[in-house]
Image (tube, rainbow, N blue to C red):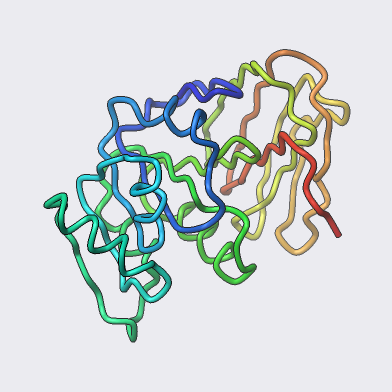
Length: 223
């Protein structure tokens, strides 16, 4: 999967989901949208309208989207799947339930913590390979027995490893300041953060568990 900042040697994504969080840079979005089936989720329809991107479908309860953007989608004859505001699943979860092939999701960062928490775990457990990305941040998942190489075109400011399962064992990563070899990482003590990449390519693998790999490419406020 090739992104403007890096290339991850996992399957190419078939679908692009545009959610309603922080807007990606237009040039970044245009670079990644080519050849993909596009879904807009709730407020993500505003991004599509403003960037003149025509999704195949718009999904959500539209409690946060401008009505004018929904009207725009209807005028473009884009199918609109409207859900009630009072429901058991988030708009993003509803969109993920329709994805059968690897997907890239953007407009996913920069919002409320509870939404971010839900999105990160929902994407990890969607049943297909999901990459969360914009020009500033990227998250992808490495699961039991998997190994991926990442080639960088832009060096990240930080790399963090975040256990999604309670325990991730047999974790290996090279070409970083703090290398790991058969390490065990625990969800209740996520200390493998703010590592530094020290080469143009890294390789990471996990023996068991599900690990989120996070890259930050620009200065963000941190605690």
